[in-house]
Image 1 (cartoon, one colour):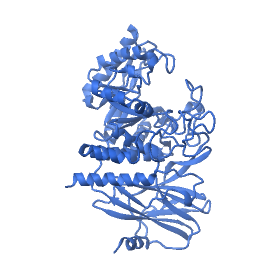
Image 2 (tube, rainbow, N blue to C red; image 1 turned 180 degrees about the vertical axis):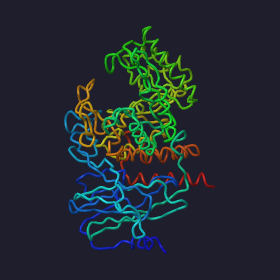
Image 3 (cartoon, rainbow, N blue to C red; image 1 turned 90 degrees about the horizontal axis):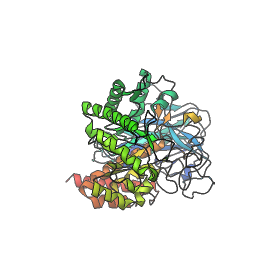
Length: 561
Protein backbone atom coordinates (compact mmCIF):
# COMPACT_ATOMS: atom_id res chain seq x y z
CA UNK A 1 0.00 0.00 0.00
CA UNK A 2 1.49 3.37 -0.99
CA UNK A 3 1.85 6.35 1.36
CA UNK A 4 -1.23 8.14 0.06
CA UNK A 5 -3.43 5.06 0.56
CA UNK A 6 -2.00 4.53 4.04
CA UNK A 7 -2.95 8.08 5.02
CA UNK A 8 -6.45 7.63 3.62
CA UNK A 9 -6.83 4.33 5.47
CA UNK A 10 -5.70 5.91 8.76
CA UNK A 11 -8.19 8.71 8.37
CA UNK A 12 -11.01 6.41 7.28
CA UNK A 13 -11.84 5.60 10.90
CA UNK A 14 -13.19 9.12 11.22
CA UNK A 15 -16.56 10.15 9.81
CA UNK A 16 -16.13 12.64 6.97
CA UNK A 17 -18.32 15.55 5.99
CA UNK A 18 -18.09 18.92 4.37
CA UNK A 19 -16.72 21.33 6.95
CA UNK A 20 -17.74 24.95 7.46
CA UNK A 21 -14.61 25.72 9.45
CA UNK A 22 -11.05 25.40 8.21
CA UNK A 23 -7.90 24.01 9.81
CA UNK A 24 -4.21 23.73 8.99
CA UNK A 25 -1.08 22.15 10.43
CA UNK A 26 1.44 24.91 11.10
CA UNK A 27 5.07 25.05 12.11
CA UNK A 28 5.54 25.35 15.90
CA UNK A 29 8.56 27.58 15.23
CA UNK A 30 6.35 30.25 13.64
CA UNK A 31 4.08 32.43 15.74
CA UNK A 32 0.33 32.05 15.63
CA UNK A 33 -1.74 35.08 16.55
CA UNK A 34 -5.30 35.55 17.73
CA UNK A 35 -6.10 37.05 14.31
CA UNK A 36 -4.09 34.55 12.20
CA UNK A 37 -5.72 33.37 8.98
CA UNK A 38 -5.31 29.97 7.34
CA UNK A 39 -4.07 31.53 4.10
CA UNK A 40 -1.07 33.23 5.70
CA UNK A 41 0.27 30.72 8.23
CA UNK A 42 3.54 28.76 7.91
CA UNK A 43 2.26 25.31 6.89
CA UNK A 44 3.91 22.09 8.04
CA UNK A 45 3.23 18.68 6.51
CA UNK A 46 6.52 16.82 7.11
CA UNK A 47 9.11 16.72 9.90
CA UNK A 48 12.42 14.94 10.53
CA UNK A 49 13.27 13.84 14.07
CA UNK A 50 15.88 11.79 15.94
CA UNK A 51 14.82 8.34 17.12
CA UNK A 52 14.19 9.73 20.62
CA UNK A 53 13.22 13.28 19.66
CA UNK A 54 10.01 15.30 19.98
CA UNK A 55 7.33 15.38 17.29
CA UNK A 56 5.30 18.56 17.58
CA UNK A 57 2.99 20.65 15.45
CA UNK A 58 0.52 23.51 15.78
CA UNK A 59 -3.01 23.37 14.43
CA UNK A 60 -4.85 26.58 13.56
CA UNK A 61 -8.63 26.18 13.50
CA UNK A 62 -10.57 29.08 11.98
CA UNK A 63 -14.25 29.82 11.51
CA UNK A 64 -15.58 27.88 14.48
CA UNK A 65 -18.94 28.41 16.10
CA UNK A 66 -18.16 30.28 19.35
CA UNK A 67 -18.91 28.65 22.70
CA UNK A 68 -19.59 25.24 21.17
CA UNK A 69 -17.78 21.98 21.90
CA UNK A 70 -14.63 21.28 19.87
CA UNK A 71 -13.01 17.84 19.96
CA UNK A 72 -9.84 16.52 18.40
CA UNK A 73 -7.65 13.47 18.44
CA UNK A 74 -4.70 11.88 16.66
CA UNK A 75 -4.09 8.45 15.16
CA UNK A 76 -0.92 8.06 17.26
CA UNK A 77 -1.34 7.32 20.95
CA UNK A 78 0.76 8.98 23.64
CA UNK A 79 0.61 12.55 22.41
CA UNK A 80 -0.16 15.57 24.57
CA UNK A 81 -2.64 18.28 23.59
CA UNK A 82 -2.45 21.95 24.55
CA UNK A 83 -4.77 24.85 23.94
CA UNK A 84 -2.84 27.93 22.86
CA UNK A 85 -3.85 31.08 24.71
CA UNK A 86 -3.09 34.55 23.47
CA UNK A 87 -1.09 37.14 25.40
CA UNK A 88 -1.56 40.84 24.56
CA UNK A 89 1.61 42.68 23.56
CA UNK A 90 1.06 46.44 23.69
CA UNK A 91 4.65 47.64 23.12
CA UNK A 92 7.56 46.41 21.05
CA UNK A 93 11.15 45.71 22.06
CA UNK A 94 13.50 48.65 21.53
CA UNK A 95 16.19 48.62 18.88
CA UNK A 96 18.83 48.30 21.63
CA UNK A 97 16.68 46.43 24.14
CA UNK A 98 14.06 47.07 26.83
CA UNK A 99 10.86 48.56 25.34
CA UNK A 100 10.63 51.11 22.57
CA UNK A 101 10.38 54.64 23.89
CA UNK A 102 9.11 55.82 20.51
CA UNK A 103 6.85 53.40 18.60
CA UNK A 104 8.45 52.42 15.33
CA UNK A 105 12.07 52.80 16.47
CA UNK A 106 12.80 49.10 15.99
CA UNK A 107 12.35 47.99 12.36
CA UNK A 108 13.34 44.37 13.13
CA UNK A 109 10.28 43.14 15.02
CA UNK A 110 8.27 40.25 13.61
CA UNK A 111 5.08 42.26 14.12
CA UNK A 112 4.22 45.78 15.22
CA UNK A 113 2.31 46.12 18.49
CA UNK A 114 -0.42 45.96 19.57
CA UNK A 115 -1.23 42.32 18.88
CA UNK A 116 -2.19 39.11 20.69
CA UNK A 117 0.20 36.20 20.31
CA UNK A 118 -0.39 32.52 21.15
CA UNK A 119 2.42 31.90 23.64
CA UNK A 120 0.64 30.12 26.52
CA UNK A 121 0.29 26.34 26.16
CA UNK A 122 -2.53 25.18 28.44
CA UNK A 123 -2.64 21.39 28.92
CA UNK A 124 -5.92 19.81 27.83
CA UNK A 125 -7.22 16.82 29.75
CA UNK A 126 -8.65 13.90 27.80
CA UNK A 127 -12.36 14.32 27.34
CA UNK A 128 -13.49 10.71 27.14
CA UNK A 129 -11.68 9.21 30.11
CA UNK A 130 -10.05 6.51 28.02
CA UNK A 131 -10.14 4.62 24.75
CA UNK A 132 -13.27 5.00 22.66
CA UNK A 133 -14.35 2.90 19.68
CA UNK A 134 -10.83 1.59 19.16
CA UNK A 135 -9.22 4.97 18.62
CA UNK A 136 -7.13 7.30 20.78
CA UNK A 137 -8.69 9.34 23.53
CA UNK A 138 -10.43 12.50 22.36
CA UNK A 139 -9.42 15.88 23.78
CA UNK A 140 -12.11 18.50 24.22
CA UNK A 141 -12.56 22.27 24.44
CA UNK A 142 -16.07 23.10 25.61
CA UNK A 143 -16.00 26.87 25.00
CA UNK A 144 -14.41 27.19 21.57
CA UNK A 145 -13.63 30.61 20.14
CA UNK A 146 -13.93 31.47 16.48
CA UNK A 147 -10.17 30.97 16.15
CA UNK A 148 -8.35 28.31 18.17
CA UNK A 149 -4.67 27.39 18.26
CA UNK A 150 -3.80 23.83 19.30
CA UNK A 151 -0.39 22.36 20.05
CA UNK A 152 0.31 18.62 19.75
CA UNK A 153 3.46 17.15 21.27
CA UNK A 154 4.67 13.56 21.27
CA UNK A 155 7.89 12.54 23.05
CA UNK A 156 9.68 9.70 21.21
CA UNK A 157 8.36 8.29 17.92
CA UNK A 158 7.22 4.62 17.93
CA UNK A 159 10.22 2.37 18.49
CA UNK A 160 11.71 1.09 15.25
CA UNK A 161 9.68 3.41 13.03
CA UNK A 162 11.39 4.88 9.97
CA UNK A 163 8.51 6.86 8.55
CA UNK A 164 4.90 7.14 9.65
CA UNK A 165 1.92 9.45 9.41
CA UNK A 166 -0.11 11.06 12.16
CA UNK A 167 -3.68 11.72 11.17
CA UNK A 168 -5.42 14.48 13.12
CA UNK A 169 -9.19 14.88 13.37
CA UNK A 170 -10.85 18.15 14.41
CA UNK A 171 -14.62 18.04 14.93
CA UNK A 172 -17.34 20.50 15.90
CA UNK A 173 -20.92 19.28 15.78
CA UNK A 174 -21.40 17.27 12.58
CA UNK A 175 -18.52 18.96 10.81
CA UNK A 176 -14.91 17.87 10.90
CA UNK A 177 -11.53 18.12 9.21
CA UNK A 178 -8.66 15.64 8.88
CA UNK A 179 -5.03 16.65 8.53
CA UNK A 180 -1.93 14.49 8.15
CA UNK A 181 1.68 14.98 9.25
CA UNK A 182 4.46 12.81 7.83
CA UNK A 183 7.20 11.98 10.34
CA UNK A 184 10.62 10.82 9.16
CA UNK A 185 12.51 9.09 11.97
CA UNK A 186 16.31 8.98 11.82
CA UNK A 187 18.49 6.45 13.62
CA UNK A 188 20.37 9.19 15.50
CA UNK A 189 19.90 9.28 19.29
CA UNK A 190 19.95 12.45 21.35
CA UNK A 191 21.92 12.30 24.61
CA UNK A 192 19.62 12.32 27.65
CA UNK A 193 19.23 15.64 29.39
CA UNK A 194 22.06 15.87 31.90
CA UNK A 195 25.82 15.73 31.95
CA UNK A 196 26.30 15.31 28.20
CA UNK A 197 23.65 17.66 26.84
CA UNK A 198 24.25 21.30 25.96
CA UNK A 199 24.52 23.46 29.10
CA UNK A 200 21.32 25.42 29.55
CA UNK A 201 19.91 27.27 32.55
CA UNK A 202 16.94 29.48 33.36
CA UNK A 203 16.93 30.97 36.85
CA UNK A 204 13.90 30.04 38.92
CA UNK A 205 12.13 32.08 41.58
CA UNK A 206 10.96 29.62 44.23
CA UNK A 207 9.16 32.27 46.29
CA UNK A 208 7.14 33.20 43.21
CA UNK A 209 6.15 29.56 42.77
CA UNK A 210 4.69 29.50 46.26
CA UNK A 211 2.95 32.85 45.99
CA UNK A 212 1.54 32.25 42.50
CA UNK A 213 -0.06 28.98 43.58
CA UNK A 214 -1.16 30.05 47.06
CA UNK A 215 1.23 27.75 48.90
CA UNK A 216 3.02 28.17 52.21
CA UNK A 217 6.73 28.69 51.45
CA UNK A 218 8.78 25.52 51.91
CA UNK A 219 5.77 23.42 52.84
CA UNK A 220 5.47 19.92 51.42
CA UNK A 221 3.04 21.27 48.82
CA UNK A 222 5.59 23.91 47.85
CA UNK A 223 8.31 21.28 47.34
CA UNK A 224 5.96 19.28 45.13
CA UNK A 225 5.29 22.41 43.09
CA UNK A 226 9.03 23.11 42.78
CA UNK A 227 9.49 19.63 41.35
CA UNK A 228 6.76 20.26 38.78
CA UNK A 229 8.54 23.43 37.64
CA UNK A 230 11.89 21.65 37.48
CA UNK A 231 10.43 18.72 35.54
CA UNK A 232 8.98 21.10 32.97
CA UNK A 233 12.40 22.77 32.69
CA UNK A 234 14.21 19.49 32.07
CA UNK A 235 11.55 18.49 29.56
CA UNK A 236 12.71 21.64 27.78
CA UNK A 237 16.30 20.24 27.99
CA UNK A 238 17.48 22.46 30.84
CA UNK A 239 20.28 20.62 32.67
CA UNK A 240 21.49 23.26 35.14
CA UNK A 241 19.84 24.31 38.38
CA UNK A 242 20.42 27.23 40.71
CA UNK A 243 20.94 26.28 44.38
CA UNK A 244 18.86 29.22 45.54
CA UNK A 245 17.60 29.93 49.05
CA UNK A 246 19.88 27.40 50.77
CA UNK A 247 21.48 29.99 53.06
CA UNK A 248 19.58 30.92 56.22
CA UNK A 249 20.13 33.86 58.56
CA UNK A 250 19.50 32.93 62.19
CA UNK A 251 17.99 35.06 64.94
CA UNK A 252 21.51 35.91 66.11
CA UNK A 253 22.40 37.24 62.65
CA UNK A 254 24.69 34.34 61.80
CA UNK A 255 24.32 32.79 58.34
CA UNK A 256 24.36 29.03 57.82
CA UNK A 257 23.43 26.52 55.13
CA UNK A 258 20.13 24.75 55.63
CA UNK A 259 21.40 21.23 54.99
CA UNK A 260 17.91 19.74 54.74
CA UNK A 261 16.90 22.27 52.11
CA UNK A 262 20.17 21.74 50.24
CA UNK A 263 19.56 17.97 50.26
CA UNK A 264 15.95 18.42 49.08
CA UNK A 265 17.01 20.55 46.12
CA UNK A 266 19.73 18.08 45.26
CA UNK A 267 17.29 15.18 45.40
CA UNK A 268 14.82 16.93 43.06
CA UNK A 269 17.58 17.90 40.64
CA UNK A 270 19.03 14.38 40.62
CA UNK A 271 15.66 12.78 39.93
CA UNK A 272 14.58 15.17 37.20
CA UNK A 273 17.72 15.32 35.06
CA UNK A 274 19.48 18.45 36.35
CA UNK A 275 23.19 17.62 36.40
CA UNK A 276 25.06 20.92 36.75
CA UNK A 277 24.54 23.03 39.86
CA UNK A 278 24.98 26.79 40.18
CA UNK A 279 25.92 28.32 43.50
CA UNK A 280 24.01 31.57 44.02
CA UNK A 281 25.83 34.90 43.90
CA UNK A 282 27.80 35.55 47.07
CA UNK A 283 28.02 39.32 46.55
CA UNK A 284 25.90 42.11 45.12
CA UNK A 285 26.11 45.81 44.34
CA UNK A 286 26.15 48.14 47.35
CA UNK A 287 24.07 50.97 45.93
CA UNK A 288 22.17 49.41 43.08
CA UNK A 289 23.14 48.21 39.63
CA UNK A 290 26.45 49.56 38.37
CA UNK A 291 27.80 50.93 41.66
CA UNK A 292 31.54 50.53 42.15
CA UNK A 293 31.52 48.41 45.32
CA UNK A 294 30.09 45.01 46.25
CA UNK A 295 28.73 43.80 49.55
CA UNK A 296 28.64 40.25 50.83
CA UNK A 297 25.10 38.87 50.66
CA UNK A 298 23.15 38.80 53.95
CA UNK A 299 25.34 41.69 55.19
CA UNK A 300 25.99 45.35 54.53
CA UNK A 301 29.75 44.78 54.54
CA UNK A 302 31.75 45.77 51.48
CA UNK A 303 33.67 42.77 50.21
CA UNK A 304 37.00 44.62 50.10
CA UNK A 305 36.85 45.40 53.83
CA UNK A 306 38.02 43.03 56.54
CA UNK A 307 34.44 42.44 57.71
CA UNK A 308 33.13 41.85 54.20
CA UNK A 309 35.99 39.56 53.23
CA UNK A 310 35.51 37.51 56.40
CA UNK A 311 31.77 37.11 55.76
CA UNK A 312 32.45 36.18 52.15
CA UNK A 313 35.04 33.58 53.10
CA UNK A 314 32.59 31.97 55.54
CA UNK A 315 29.94 31.60 52.83
CA UNK A 316 32.47 30.15 50.41
CA UNK A 317 33.69 27.66 53.01
CA UNK A 318 30.13 26.56 53.77
CA UNK A 319 29.55 25.89 50.09
CA UNK A 320 32.79 23.98 49.59
CA UNK A 321 32.07 21.80 52.62
CA UNK A 322 28.76 20.70 51.09
CA UNK A 323 30.35 20.27 47.67
CA UNK A 324 33.11 18.04 49.01
CA UNK A 325 30.87 16.08 51.37
CA UNK A 326 28.36 15.30 48.62
CA UNK A 327 30.87 14.74 45.80
CA UNK A 328 29.62 17.63 43.66
CA UNK A 329 32.91 19.19 42.57
CA UNK A 330 32.58 18.18 38.89
CA UNK A 331 28.98 19.40 38.79
CA UNK A 332 29.38 22.81 40.43
CA UNK A 333 29.65 26.32 38.95
CA UNK A 334 29.91 29.23 41.35
CA UNK A 335 28.54 32.72 40.73
CA UNK A 336 30.33 35.62 42.45
CA UNK A 337 28.45 38.84 41.54
CA UNK A 338 26.02 39.48 38.72
CA UNK A 339 26.86 41.74 35.77
CA UNK A 340 29.90 43.66 37.03
CA UNK A 341 31.08 46.38 34.66
CA UNK A 342 34.00 48.65 33.92
CA UNK A 343 33.37 50.76 37.03
CA UNK A 344 34.12 47.90 39.43
CA UNK A 345 36.92 45.83 37.93
CA UNK A 346 39.30 46.05 40.96
CA UNK A 347 36.51 45.33 43.43
CA UNK A 348 35.31 42.32 41.43
CA UNK A 349 38.86 40.96 41.11
CA UNK A 350 39.30 41.08 44.89
CA UNK A 351 35.83 39.63 45.53
CA UNK A 352 36.32 36.80 43.05
CA UNK A 353 39.79 36.16 44.42
CA UNK A 354 38.39 35.57 47.91
CA UNK A 355 35.77 33.14 46.57
CA UNK A 356 38.35 31.28 44.51
CA UNK A 357 40.73 31.07 47.47
CA UNK A 358 38.15 29.41 49.70
CA UNK A 359 36.57 27.33 46.94
CA UNK A 360 39.77 26.10 45.25
CA UNK A 361 39.30 24.37 41.92
CA UNK A 362 35.61 25.30 41.64
CA UNK A 363 34.73 26.96 38.34
CA UNK A 364 33.44 30.52 38.69
CA UNK A 365 31.01 31.98 36.17
CA UNK A 366 29.36 35.37 35.85
CA UNK A 367 27.67 37.63 33.34
CA UNK A 368 30.92 39.46 32.60
CA UNK A 369 31.74 41.27 29.35
CA UNK A 370 34.52 43.81 30.03
CA UNK A 371 37.89 42.58 28.66
CA UNK A 372 39.63 44.08 31.71
CA UNK A 373 38.23 41.24 33.84
CA UNK A 374 40.60 38.80 32.13
CA UNK A 375 41.98 36.25 34.57
CA UNK A 376 39.34 36.96 37.22
CA UNK A 377 36.92 34.11 36.37
CA UNK A 378 36.81 30.72 34.69
CA UNK A 379 33.67 31.00 32.57
CA UNK A 380 32.66 34.20 30.81
CA UNK A 381 28.96 34.70 30.13
CA UNK A 382 28.51 37.74 27.85
CA UNK A 383 25.31 38.76 26.11
CA UNK A 384 25.10 37.39 22.58
CA UNK A 385 25.78 40.79 21.00
CA UNK A 386 28.84 41.40 23.18
CA UNK A 387 30.21 37.95 22.38
CA UNK A 388 29.80 38.46 18.65
CA UNK A 389 31.41 41.89 18.66
CA UNK A 390 34.41 40.66 20.67
CA UNK A 391 34.54 37.12 19.31
CA UNK A 392 38.31 37.18 18.73
CA UNK A 393 38.94 38.51 22.21
CA UNK A 394 36.96 35.70 23.85
CA UNK A 395 38.85 33.22 21.68
CA UNK A 396 42.09 34.62 23.07
CA UNK A 397 40.83 34.17 26.64
CA UNK A 398 40.08 30.54 25.85
CA UNK A 399 43.52 30.06 24.33
CA UNK A 400 45.62 32.03 26.81
CA UNK A 401 43.77 31.48 30.09
CA UNK A 402 41.96 28.20 29.45
CA UNK A 403 38.65 30.01 30.02
CA UNK A 404 35.29 28.82 28.71
CA UNK A 405 32.42 30.93 27.38
CA UNK A 406 28.66 30.80 27.75
CA UNK A 407 26.28 33.50 26.52
CA UNK A 408 23.01 35.00 27.66
CA UNK A 409 20.15 37.26 26.69
CA UNK A 410 17.94 39.45 28.86
CA UNK A 411 16.38 42.88 28.36
CA UNK A 412 19.24 43.42 25.91
CA UNK A 413 19.87 43.01 23.00
CA UNK A 414 17.02 44.27 20.86
CA UNK A 415 16.88 45.01 17.15
CA UNK A 416 17.58 41.97 14.98
CA UNK A 417 19.70 40.23 17.62
CA UNK A 418 18.51 36.79 18.66
CA UNK A 419 16.50 36.87 21.86
CA UNK A 420 13.34 35.16 23.11
CA UNK A 421 10.92 38.10 23.17
CA UNK A 422 7.34 37.76 21.96
CA UNK A 423 7.74 40.26 19.12
CA UNK A 424 10.78 38.69 17.48
CA UNK A 425 10.47 35.68 15.20
CA UNK A 426 9.86 32.52 17.22
CA UNK A 427 12.74 30.96 15.29
CA UNK A 428 15.22 33.25 17.09
CA UNK A 429 15.44 31.32 20.40
CA UNK A 430 15.68 28.07 18.44
CA UNK A 431 18.72 29.34 16.52
CA UNK A 432 20.68 30.70 19.51
CA UNK A 433 22.05 27.19 20.29
CA UNK A 434 23.00 26.67 16.62
CA UNK A 435 25.27 29.72 16.53
CA UNK A 436 26.56 28.94 20.01
CA UNK A 437 27.80 25.51 18.93
CA UNK A 438 29.36 26.89 15.75
CA UNK A 439 31.34 29.39 17.83
CA UNK A 440 32.31 26.97 20.62
CA UNK A 441 30.04 28.61 23.18
CA UNK A 442 29.45 26.02 25.92
CA UNK A 443 26.14 27.09 27.39
CA UNK A 444 23.18 29.47 27.46
CA UNK A 445 21.77 31.34 30.46
CA UNK A 446 18.61 33.35 30.98
CA UNK A 447 17.63 35.05 34.22
CA UNK A 448 13.84 34.65 33.92
CA UNK A 449 12.20 31.24 34.11
CA UNK A 450 9.24 32.36 36.26
CA UNK A 451 10.35 35.82 37.36
CA UNK A 452 7.16 37.78 36.66
CA UNK A 453 7.25 40.81 38.98
CA UNK A 454 4.57 40.20 41.59
CA UNK A 455 5.59 43.35 43.47
CA UNK A 456 4.31 45.32 40.48
CA UNK A 457 1.18 43.24 40.14
CA UNK A 458 2.37 41.69 36.87
CA UNK A 459 -0.01 39.01 35.61
CA UNK A 460 2.00 37.07 33.00
CA UNK A 461 -1.19 36.02 31.19
CA UNK A 462 -2.13 39.67 30.64
CA UNK A 463 1.13 41.61 31.05
CA UNK A 464 4.19 40.18 29.28
CA UNK A 465 6.37 42.78 30.99
CA UNK A 466 6.27 44.58 34.36
CA UNK A 467 4.95 48.11 34.49
CA UNK A 468 8.43 49.58 34.88
CA UNK A 469 12.00 48.57 35.52
CA UNK A 470 14.21 51.19 37.14
CA UNK A 471 17.92 51.77 36.90
CA UNK A 472 19.99 52.96 33.99
CA UNK A 473 17.15 52.54 31.50
CA UNK A 474 15.27 55.42 33.14
CA UNK A 475 12.26 53.44 34.22
CA UNK A 476 11.63 51.84 30.84
CA UNK A 477 10.43 48.28 31.22
CA UNK A 478 11.72 44.87 30.18
CA UNK A 479 10.70 43.49 26.76
CA UNK A 480 7.79 41.11 26.35
CA UNK A 481 8.46 37.70 27.88
CA UNK A 482 11.85 38.57 29.36
CA UNK A 483 10.65 37.84 32.89
CA UNK A 484 9.33 34.34 32.19
CA UNK A 485 9.20 31.42 29.80
CA UNK A 486 6.52 29.44 31.68
CA UNK A 487 3.15 30.40 33.15
CA UNK A 488 1.52 29.73 36.55
CA UNK A 489 -1.23 27.29 35.57
CA UNK A 490 -4.05 25.97 37.70
CA UNK A 491 -2.19 22.99 39.16
CA UNK A 492 1.37 23.72 38.12
CA UNK A 493 3.45 25.43 35.47
CA UNK A 494 2.29 25.67 31.87
CA UNK A 495 4.86 25.75 29.06
CA UNK A 496 5.12 28.44 26.42
CA UNK A 497 5.70 28.36 22.68
CA UNK A 498 9.08 29.99 23.43
CA UNK A 499 10.04 27.22 25.88
CA UNK A 500 9.34 24.61 23.20
CA UNK A 501 11.16 26.60 20.51
CA UNK A 502 14.23 26.82 22.75
CA UNK A 503 13.95 23.09 23.47
CA UNK A 504 14.05 22.37 19.74
CA UNK A 505 17.19 24.48 19.43
CA UNK A 506 18.82 22.67 22.36
CA UNK A 507 18.11 19.33 20.68
CA UNK A 508 19.79 20.68 17.56
CA UNK A 509 22.77 21.87 19.61
CA UNK A 510 23.36 18.30 20.75
CA UNK A 511 23.01 17.00 17.19
CA UNK A 512 25.45 19.62 15.89
CA UNK A 513 27.91 18.87 18.68
CA UNK A 514 27.90 15.19 17.72
CA UNK A 515 28.39 16.08 14.05
CA UNK A 516 31.21 18.53 14.81
CA UNK A 517 33.15 15.81 16.60
CA UNK A 518 33.10 13.83 13.37
CA UNK A 519 33.16 16.59 10.74
CA UNK A 520 33.47 20.16 11.99
CA UNK A 521 33.51 21.67 8.52
CA UNK A 522 30.30 19.88 7.56
CA UNK A 523 28.50 20.89 10.79
CA UNK A 524 29.50 24.55 10.63
CA UNK A 525 28.64 24.71 6.94
CA UNK A 526 25.14 23.46 7.68
CA UNK A 527 24.67 26.07 10.43
CA UNK A 528 25.80 28.86 8.12
CA UNK A 529 23.08 27.95 5.62
CA UNK A 530 20.58 29.49 8.04
CA UNK A 531 22.65 31.51 10.58
CA UNK A 532 26.00 33.24 10.20
CA UNK A 533 25.82 34.94 13.58
CA UNK A 534 23.48 36.05 16.36
CA UNK A 535 22.03 38.82 14.17
CA UNK A 536 22.73 37.41 10.71
CA UNK A 537 20.22 34.66 10.07
CA UNK A 538 17.42 33.69 7.70
CA UNK A 539 14.10 33.58 9.59
CA UNK A 540 12.63 30.81 7.45
CA UNK A 541 11.00 27.77 9.03
CA UNK A 542 11.10 26.01 5.66
CA UNK A 543 14.87 26.45 5.51
CA UNK A 544 15.21 25.40 9.15
CA UNK A 545 13.39 22.11 8.41
CA UNK A 546 15.60 21.46 5.38
CA UNK A 547 18.84 22.07 7.28
CA UNK A 548 17.72 20.01 10.28
CA UNK A 549 16.94 17.12 7.96
CA UNK A 550 20.41 17.42 6.43
CA UNK A 551 22.03 17.45 9.90
CA UNK A 552 20.27 14.19 10.76
CA UNK A 553 21.21 12.65 7.42
CA UNK A 554 24.84 13.71 7.81
CA UNK A 555 24.96 12.14 11.27
CA UNK A 556 23.46 8.91 9.99
CA UNK A 557 26.03 8.70 7.22
CA UNK A 558 28.91 9.23 9.66
CA UNK A 559 27.63 7.07 12.50
CA UNK A 560 26.22 4.15 10.54
CA UNK A 561 28.89 2.80 8.17
